[in-house]
Image 1 (tube, helix red, strand yellow):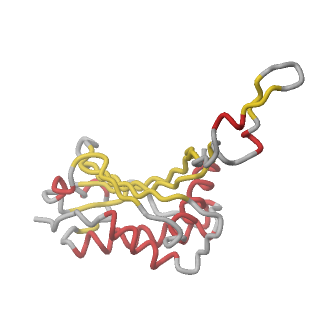
Image 2 (cartoon, helix red, strand yellow):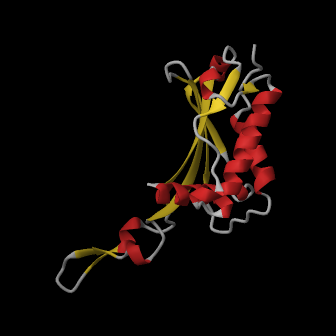
Length: 193
């Protein structure tokens, strides 16, 4: 399970640092950002990753930059970070997921052109060796920020960023890209009361 989490984080970092390659999509999945206004204090559900846990350096950097930017954005809106989770009114968590999706390539030819009879008279689809008209698989990275009430773990709000992951990722601008993504994820969060 930890190995899958490491792989997921590494792939998500690739997602975040290739900001110009394709469009970043933001979606509110649960609740409303307005639900947060009465919960002025927050803490993280998990502790920051450390070298002692043997995470790759890229994963440690991602965790550090993401936490720091979420904290900065929330504090700018009047929310207060507390170290003791029991003193926080809400808890913040992030999850990374990578899923494989299917896209269908438009065929500019007659789809029936890919069906032929073999030597025994059976219909055989030859499109598998020809990319036109067949499905392509690609990976989409997801980053979810979730806010829950500390008292009963009720979900207050969840917002998700998704983006197609390309193979030409660079981490040289990870910090600035994380800032942009977190800014978009928290865009609808109002100032604390």
